[in-house]
Length: 155
Image 1 (cartoon, one colour):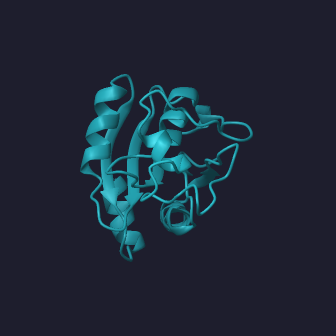
Image 2 (tube, helix red, strand yellow):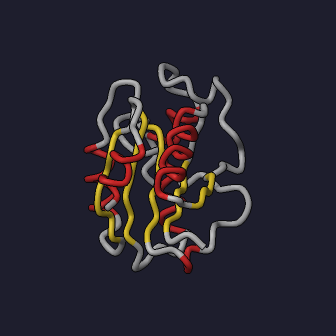
Image 3 (cartoon, rainbow, N blue to C red):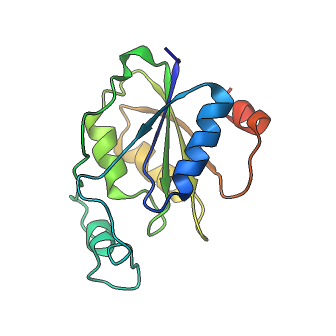
């Protein structure tokens, strides 16, 4: 078994592509964080204050359900978690994953994709809100990244 798990949430496929690149570069296993109810394009309409994603992101207590079983993280030394940036931070389903997966004692690195926002705010918020977890770094991976860059980042 690999010592690294690459877990990701991807609403449109962009983050999934980057997760696959990262897993290939480091020989990691992939786990897709799939919402129990998938997001439609109407759900993702950030300009509609009543869209599902807008409502979720405005609710601090929201924790969307994850479909299927969570991964058994016991065989991994580290977990890389990826997500698109929504409203300058991580989608609420990432909090569901952080709270329900057994990540204690694991090195956690975060990566994100974004049309215009950075990853900094999401990393700061998740470190603050989950001090019991060892969140080490965050990287925005919008552009083409090569395997050497990925391995250097996660070394």
